[in-house]
Amino acid sequence: MLLAVSGGVDSVVLCELCKQAGYDFGIAHCNFQLRDADSERDEKFVKEIAQKHNVAFYTIKFDTKKVAAERKISVQEAARELRYTWFEEVRIAGGYGFILTAHHADDNIETVLMNFFRGTGIKGLKGIEPGHGFIVRPLLFARRRELEDFLGTNRLEYVSDFTNLSNDYTRNYFRNQVIPFIEKSFPEVQENILGNISRLREAGQLYQQAISFHKRKLLEPRGNEVHIPVLKLRKTEPLHTIVYEIAREYGFSPAQVEEIIALLDSASGRYIQSSSHRIIKNRNWLIIAPNEVEQSDIVIIEGTGNWRCAMGKMQVETALMSNFISPQARPTSNFQACLNAAEIKFPLLLRKWKQGDYFYPLGMAKKKKLARFFIDMKLSKTEKEKIWVVEMDKKIIWIVGHRIDDRFKITGKTKSILKLSFTQT
Image 1 (cartoon, one colour):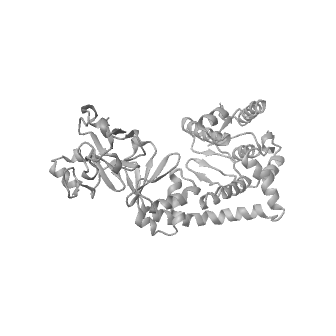
Image 2 (image 1 turned 180 degrees about the horizontal axis):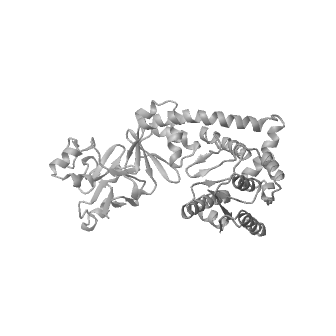
Image 3 (image 1 turned 135 degrees about the vertical axis):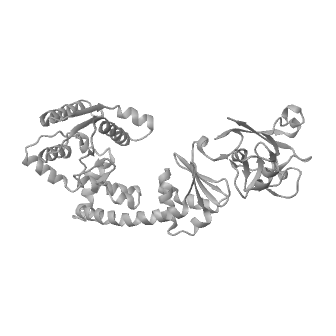
């Protein structure tokens, strides 16, 4: 086993317990370089523990503040990401079966309280998991005072982190201020929270079973996207909880749930965005798509400019009808379309065609399904698979590379035009 050791009370106890139990282990220590000389002191101290136990010792230095600034995350988040990534690298390279951390019951109490105020739902109220993948947390049963008693009984030394007394970090603030304040009214609050963690962990299992059931009914994976039928989702209960559980996996916050639900009754093209994904309303579907439009099968065109998709680039520009008279302004290929700008309203959707799509081909007063149009054009299956369309408010205005919709053509009354130019990559 690979033990994550900081040199504090809990990790020193973890080392001693593993030694007394006769386990085969190595020690890994992260120097986050956040406390100047104390960081170097801690590294030296942990190295001495490894030498005392005659086990392998691994250490690494991180420029944690720099990483946090570059990734635009908190120092605590940066430290967490850095250490767990490195622990896994050491585990694999050293041939270790598991990574052990020294989280204890008091850590769990603090975590549950913080998660409650963050609004993480029942998942956060279950507290720190005893194990996940290759990570195991064997001290969650023990209170900190029990670890301190064990330390004294076995006459073990440890190092103190002076930042634990500072309330600059959220966890320290809860430990030093919030919990003592609550204890004035509820002296048994910590034991009560530990009891709740146990009960909520079992309730969480039932909760996840129900959520998985609804996800199987609602979610339709399509390549890099997930499609959700609006009518089916609208009838689902409890709606807010299920929407949250679906959306949170794609970076959406609890505060965005109401906005996502509002999409059910919005016009096509409306969307809500997280740091990594968009949820887009497209006719009778909600589509969860990556923000990297090159990976997405649907692109929102919000105005003039250049817009990329998996097959190429769409350039959108406007011009006065008087300029359109010159030959240079007119379309030079099937991958250019000129439309009556007065009839166009943004946003537009650039997407792959699908069964059931129809339009009014230029020069025709009757609508035609795209599937029939492609048969008439004698397109092969592979050619059809590469076709994209531009849609506005549930109306297809252009089959890219083929034909525009008659309803949006230029007429004698047209004053300005919208020019779409598609370049394949």
